[in-house]
Amino acid sequence: MSLDRVIKSLVNLGLSQADAEVYVHIATKGPATAKNIIKNLTFNKRQIYRSLKALQEKGITSGNDEYPAEFSAVSFEKALDLLLEVKKEQVKSLEASKAELISDFQTKKKKIRGN
Image (cartoon, rainbow, N blue to C red; front, side, top):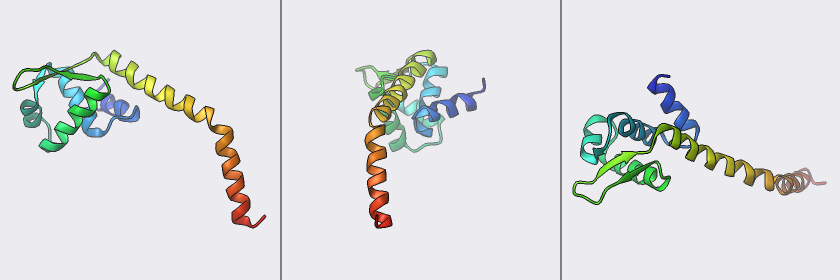
């Protein structure tokens, strides 16, 4: 599997392009400082820090308490598991509200048509 395919898969699972590239950089190169990541990727500094924060919130990367902080990534398998779990929860939520959504749609449709 090429890294482009890996990145596309991560984007399809809900990461932004920048988040996916930052994750792949850390996961393939090993722990890195934000400065190192900025130097190696084409995103601006602000976007890299946003991505690092977003990835940490998802549990996909973590940073240590040293200065400068060094960021590491969970395994690709673990990242996929975490992202798939979020997607599964989203599907469950949509399935749970399906009947209500259909009812709301039908009501609005009748009002628009004047029935």
